[in-house]
Image (tube, rainbow, N blue to C red):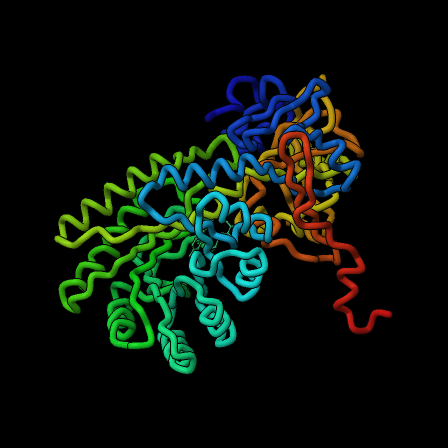
Length: 467
Ligand SMILES: Cc1ncc(COP(=O)(O)O)c(C=O)c1O
Ligand SMILES: N[C@@H](CCCC[NH3+])C(=O)O
């Protein structure tokens, strides 16, 4: 995937672009691997997703808007379900959750990973079978744990000794047995941004395998009659391409699994290797498909279990980003275009859109790269290197750091950013009292608002001094 190949760098400011970013042959073309399957440019050069012209979508519902390609989401969910045959697949709701998504996930035969009382509420409101829910979190409150037990959640992934104590008490009070997995840290340095890596030792999640804390937690859960020990859980981080991290983690986790079998005489029936599978935000990212991942992970698990002489447990995974990320693009309206002079006679075009870090914090938070396209028309203008920025009072309010857009972009044009399905709406904020955009599902030429746009009234409703 090197779609921006060929062509030359923009003469004036090319040296400021990342070295891999090249002017495209035709700036109107979509770099298809970055877009949902049912995205294309139509005869006018406008972006169409799921048979819906984004110009019409914006006319009806305004901008910014998250456009969710239903068929693409379902196909990715199915690809994980089918690729990972014999595994259980939990969609990680933290990537993006609403009742419609819960229903799609359940219809496609996946389970659901939740990590707060709020996500539990969404799942239950959507009518999810509680037994198909896995409940994560390093600091679940007593209330959250009680709700999970009362609802009959299928697995609670415990993360601390305090939580184990809480759960024993709550289960005792209710006369139930709580199904438990133990979140472990495998001591792996995943090759991803520091803030989204979760299996190195110095961070808040899980029980360390190395220190012995994980084994102690397993032993305690095993002894408690109020708890049912399902197995170990490892999640090494997010937006990972290199399967060696998964391999090292799986080896360490299975070594612990085998030690438990050996020393405690317990064959834990399950094992969860987490999510974290990377997607393509730019041409530099080259994700594996689910079937390939499944083969690699399946081989490692089998090999390790055989080496330790233990039965292969039921393995589960928790992809979030890889299912919903590519299924969504965000459509913005351009408000201003500004040429800013840099040193040595260079300049940069700043294109301001009507959203920004409140609907996509990832660029500011993780220095994430995104790409974009002019979505409302064909342009015959030369490509020019641009930076797409938001409307917030923050100079780091950048949506797309560097992209080639036509040099004639003007206010009123629409710009669309692909790959915004994961951790954009779910991490959206009301910074500067900007209402959060809607999520609009498109399919077969039809559109349906699945999360409506927030209004100023919504925001003022929480303000106790407002009339
Ligand atoms: C425990 C757990 N499972 C699954 C996920 C989903 O990760 P991703 O969206 O990268 O697949 C996360 C987030 O990183 C997580 O913390
Ligand atoms: N929120 C992060 C991923 C971390 C997910 C949860 N452990 C992102 O946008 O990439």
